[in-house]
Every structure is written in structure tokens, then in C-alpha cells.
Image 1 (tube, rainbow, N blue to C red):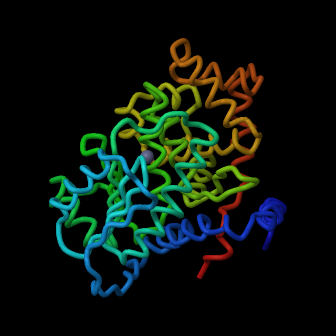
Image 2 (tube, rainbow, N blue to C red):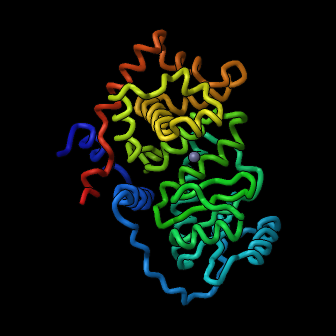
Image 3 (tube, rainbow, N blue to C red):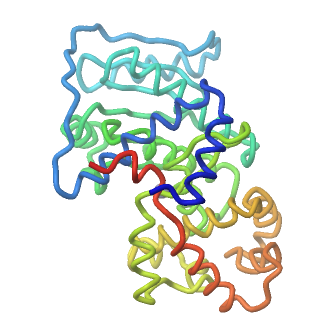
Length: 328
Ligand SMILES: [Zn+2]
């Protein structure tokens, strides 16, 4: 059941150094969870909290701001069994084993931040941001309420600008973590970034790996819904999607907006134009706040209606990455 695209992807995969495979392995459990979540409860890891709270600097960090921040954090840890790893510009706090928290900090957080900065972002977020990695949904729900007084509206995780925190249920996989890491970087580097591009870039990298040293988004669980919406003719036109403010984007058919944005970014990536688009859009954002004119220029397209139709046909040919691997 391997198609051409799948073969191509696998041949690219063979070029990836063994060390670079880790991020791919990290994101797959997230997909697994989503594929099964409709019918089954996720199996929670059976952890024994026999360890003591531990502070592990990921590297020698003389920065007193971080030291002070960690001291403050230690006072507000909701219970015993949490580890803290300093991974600038983030501090990672988790209630899995110390080794697991360190692994997430180095192989997901550091990797994603480094790779995103390599292609897109020149500035770190200006504040130290906390990444809370709760080991299961019970810990995630309970501690989000205890620490921030809010009940999560998603089972996976979210970024709270107010609390300067990424709050994650890490049992759903590292994909959502990479998605949420995009947001504070976007906030620091792309003033007034419209929701379609902020969420398009975040969701592009929620299923990601590395190709030739660069971060690469793969097709994922948002694809079938988008294909259904294309067949039903309910996908918003690019002009409308790109002009949406936060209220329209997050309220009106949110799932379709995320998916349409993600696969526009994916399409640009596959044509080797995404990094160029990001830079051009950023440079011209005052004249073109939605990015629509920049998109037309980058694609060298005059008739966007015709382009949308071509692009929709292209989306219908895509297959969900790892579908074969994870299908029960
Ligand atoms: Zn997001």
C-alpha cells in the first residue's frame, strides 16, 4: 500500500542520520493517541514516583535570572515528584521520571527551538517561559486548575501568554509540544501575525522530523477532515481564511481553519517556498497584514480561484503519514 509519495518520503528518511530520528519517534505517539482517542481511552504509563524532586541544568547556566526563576518555581510545584530542567529560553517542569523530563527538554524542546531558529526566528521569547509536562490527563487537568485556575479546553496542551507557560499533557506525545513552541517564537518575531499563519505553522510542525538538517512537517491527522471538507465544498477561500481575525478563526469552524492553514503551509513547504514566504510576509506585513498579496507574489499566481482548485486537487492526493505504521 505504499504510494509514490510514501516511497519518496521513505527514501528521504533513509538519508536521515540515526541521531535525527528521535524527534520522529517522539511525535508518533501523539498521532497514535489521536487515531485511537475517538474510541479508546489512552493507556497511561504506569509510573512509580520513587524519585526525589531534582533540578537538572541542561548545560552550565550561570544566568541568575534562570536561577531565580527556578527558585520561584520550586515554591509553586503542586506536589512532590516534579523535575526541573533549564533549557533556555525555557524551563521544563515535569512529573515523569527525571530522565524522561530531561529527554523531552533535549530531544524535543531544544531540537525544535534550534531548528525553528535556524529557518525562521532570530529572537528568543523575551520572558523565561515554563513548559509544564504533565504525565497523564489526570495530572494535566488537576494541575492546570491548581496552578493557573483554568480547566484546559483541549486534551493535548496549550500556550498561555498570560501565565508565560506551555501546559502540556505529554502522554499525548511531543507533537503538540512542538506546535505550542512555535507560538511564543512567533509572538517574539512576527508582530501581529494573523491566526491563520500562527496556527498554520504551529500545526505544520505538530507532526515533524528532520530532512537534510531542517525541520520538516509531515502530513498528519488533520488531513482526512480537510479532504472531507474539500469534497463537501466547505473549505474557506484563502482570501477569507487569511483575513480572519482571532474571533472568526477560533470560533467559526475552527477545525477546518486549522487544517486549511496547515496544508497551505505544507504546500509552500513542499514547493520549497515556505521559508521565503515567511521572510517576505514578515517584511511586508504592514502593507499586507493577511499575507494574501505576498502569497500571490511568491506563487506567481494571478487567478487565486484557479489556484485554490489546483491546490485542493493536490490535497486530495495526499496520504496521512504513518497511517500504515500505526493502523491497528
Ligand atoms: Zn496553536
